[in-house]
Structure formats: structure tokens, C-alpha cells
Image (cartoon, rainbow, N blue to C red; front, side, top):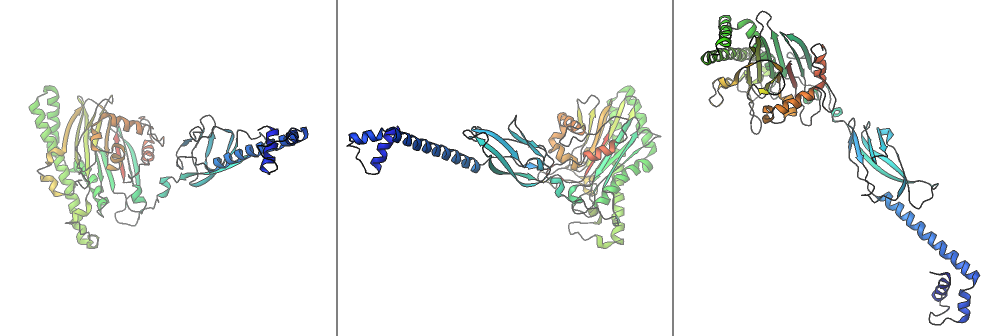
Length: 483
């Protein structure tokens, strides 16, 4: 609007004149230089007021704007991009963030992101200091407040209560070992699960191994005690030790010699009939070891039930041995001129697998007792496994010859569940390659197990690796690796 028209409009609004009748006097008044100058000042000030109103209104809109950010977690890398175009914030000409450094974060101007490694949990107040297009460069900065939610490290929420060392069946919460077994090395770690540590209960897993220098055979046993049975931690211990004891003290020497003689004869003849005889002999020997383990637990359970009947008060248990329910897997292997003979047995949901030398093939050496909805696990303590028609005992044994191998794994479900998730993945070589890569440091924690033969601290590294976090998987973890 021109200054002259503004004066006429003003007089009309004040009812001094009518828009239809404009006298020469009024026209001259509206065109007077002094009046024109005054009107122009008014118009300019009105424009400044409106401009200032729009700026202030826009600033208030920005202050009320919700800036969507991801939630972070203490100790876990965080990055949340702010898309200024999508938020209609392209008119910002200056930005500065305050309150990020205190929680371990910073603003990346190149990628328009808030990122870092959070160090404090909570709902943190953050300030965005800004100017918008139209404001003077030296004007006071506007402040927009918003929040970033940083969740606590889930690991920090778990307690680590020591188990009762005065308990008659106490065992170390965490154990690991490394040793030489013939031309291979073995590393084993067994760690109490977070669910047990949180309430101060015991490690139910166990293991045992033995290299027989005179014969060149190695036996390795791993067991997972059933957590719902109060004495299962003792059951797993007895089961593993009994397997080693059997092959150390009770194995039939004549049968053993006949077995090896036939193996050497087969190496020369490759007679399939002879191979079948060898497999039968192997299964007989392994079978005797499983019976021995079962009987050792039963004998201990029956004796304890008489001595301390107060320990046997579980209505779910039908007999004393039920209190000691434990899975059991073990392998017996030896190097011959023709390669490695590997014998295995398994009852329960713990896998045994062997990876060939060039890591192109992985062979699962046992089938698992798993139920469709859980509860399908079987135990060495159950007499019915020895005469089951649906799952014959003979199918629990395996006999394989390998030219050589890179890894032989035995593990409890505390490792298998989070790392393989479903049973079908145990049959896939690529999943085992991912598992090996994980062990070698390709994981969120960058925790690495160095399989260099000269590494004497590999058991410590394996134990540390087993601290990995997996939501919902907090059971005991035991892993034996021959490499």
C-alpha cells in the first residue's frame, strides 16, 4: 500500500471522510510530503512488526517441534540422524548442541547425526541452540530442549552372587583349561549362567577329559545338569567323570586290542564287512561307558537318599536318580596312519560337530533330543533311553574316520541356543563358519579367541568370549574345542 493510500484509508477508518467523496483538500493532505513521510514510517514499522512476529512464531514452532531420536544403550555404539529437510528445518542458519558430551555423545556436522558411545543411562535433557534465516548474526541464540533416552546396559542389571561354598555339592562358578592331547590341543571353558548368578545358585554344567599317553586315545565329556532338578549339578559331574574313569580303568583291554587290530586290517583291505564288525565293537565299548555312567549316578543317588532323605522332596521325581538328571555327550578319538578315528555318543540337546581341515565341510556327529515345544530333552539318568523303540540306543553312537580336522566341538545348549538358534542350523557348514568367525573376534564385543598353537592363555580368552550377551539366553555355557 502506498503512503498516500494509507492516509486516505486511515481517514476513512476514523470516519472523517467517505471513500466516495475525496475533496481537493483531502487529496492534497494525503499527498503532503510531511504526512507521506510519517505514513511511510508507520508502514515500515508495521512491516517490521509483522516480520518480527513471523520470526518469533517460527521460533516457537521449532521449539515445540518433536525431533525423533533412537533410544541408546550404555556401552553400545549409538547413531541417530537428524533429517532437517523432513523436519522442515531447512531455514536453520546456525545450530549448536549442549548436553551431549556429558553422556558420551557428540554432534557430527558432516552427517547431521548425534553419535557416540553412551556412558550414562536415563532420560537426558539436551539443548539445541539455533538461529533461523532472518535473524541477525549477533542475535541471542534460541534454545530448544529435547531428550535422549539411554537405556542401561542389560548386563549391569544382573547380579553376580557367589554360590554357597559350604554346600556339599558346590563347584566353581567358572572354570577353564587348556592342554595338549596328542598332536592336538584342547581348550574348555564352563561358565555359570547369568540366571544362576543372579540368584546365587550353582553351575549345573560340567566336563571332564583325559589323554591316554600309552594308547594315544583322548576322551572328552560334557554334561548339562537339568536346572529344575536340585542335584543335577552333581549328576553332570558324576556323568563326565564316570566316562573318563570307564576308559581309564574299566574298558575291556582285550576288546580294545581286537578293535585296533581290526582297524589296522581294514586300513589295508578296505573290507566293508570288516568295517561293520569294527563299528559294532566300537558301539559296544561306548555303550558300556554309558551304562557305567548311568550306574555310577544311580549308586550315588540311592546311597544319598538313605543318608540324607531331606534332600529328596521333589514331587516331580519318581526315584532318587531323577534328582540328578543330566544330559551327556562325549567323544573318543585317536590318530592313526590313515587319519583320525572319532567315536561319539549323545543324549540330550548338546551338539558335537567336527570341521574338516580346510573348513569346507562340517559334520554333526549326533542327533539332539529336542521337543517341538520344549521339554523333549532326555538324560543319561533315564533308564528308558537304553531300551527306547522310537529312538534306539544304537542310533546315539557314531563312528567316523577323517583324514584330519581343524576343530572338534562339544557344547551345551547355553552356547548352541544363542549361536545357532535352531537345530537345522547345526547341519549347515556356513553357520559353523560364522561361529568360528565369531570366536575369532567377529562379534559385538570384539572378544577374540586366538587359536595359535602356542597361545597358553586361550582358555582365559574363551572364558571371556563366553560372556557374550544374547537376550533371553542366560543359561550355563560350556564349550570344549579340540584344534
